[in-house]
Length: 351
Image 1 (cartoon, rainbow, N blue to C red):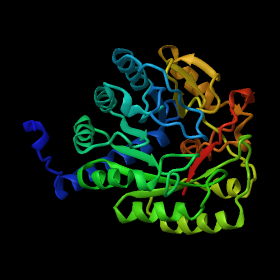
Image 2 (cartoon, rainbow, N blue to C red; image 1 turned 45 degrees about the vertical axis):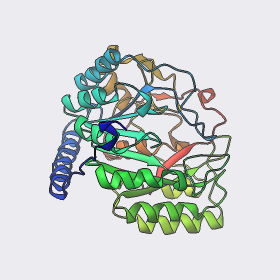
Image 3 (cartoon, one colour; image 1 turned 30 degrees about the vertical axis):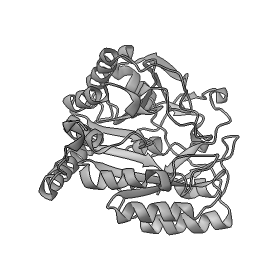
Image 4 (tube, rainbow, N blue to C red; image 1 turned 180 degrees about the vertical axis):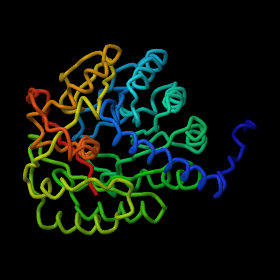
């Protein structure tokens, strides 16, 4: 056995974790203050360094099983462009971002721009040494979606498989961890969401719950048993960091929302090809290269009404747009082409 195999990693101290949490909260409050003071910069961007994923959940349309990682030099340039625009929060998604060989450099570059660094992962590749590398890179937030207690044909992101990873995070992570559970179409046992949320909260994480819609991507009200679980979990998760979810009640009831979507302005989705889109479900609009995206584009899209917004189920866009719900009525209307949606089930994170 090599000497490297016998090394025991020392978990961060409680004092260090508290200090990291306090400084992170200060930076988050400052970012909200900056957003309230000026509408001329994005608040959040999701950026994809890796389209490939090591799983194939049936509801997901945001991955493939063959793509190469975006070269790190190109990823760093894209991060710098988001910094140029004044982006407050940059979240790495995929695919599965932990498959990218230079992920630590990407996270460190996000922090260098002054932005808050987040990541959405399935958690399969986490190990103590990998978690501590993420600590050193400066990761602020991690989200893992756990779809069921036992793996099935819909999803392998189960509590049975991932519980050891959660325990590793409890011991080693200096960043905030949120666990997202789900109810709705394709989930065999709605009560799994309650079990997942209770386990997450018991380990000291925050927890959210999402609704998976049917295969047509349409709003579908929750059934009676699903609604009972959804209400139970929402009562459990009051201490979660995301608060702007008033839209969730309409979604649960299969109704539309009347709101001002700021996608393309406050929220940007940057695909693996480096193009800016409204969100993951409306790829192709406006589809401008990030290198060419300007403050003028941000301001134009901030004031542009999106025709798809009444039935939108993208939680992060709702939450980011809520910052400006009280100002700047929108003018011109753009209706993204619905053909960009697939038959995959659509997941919306709520709490």
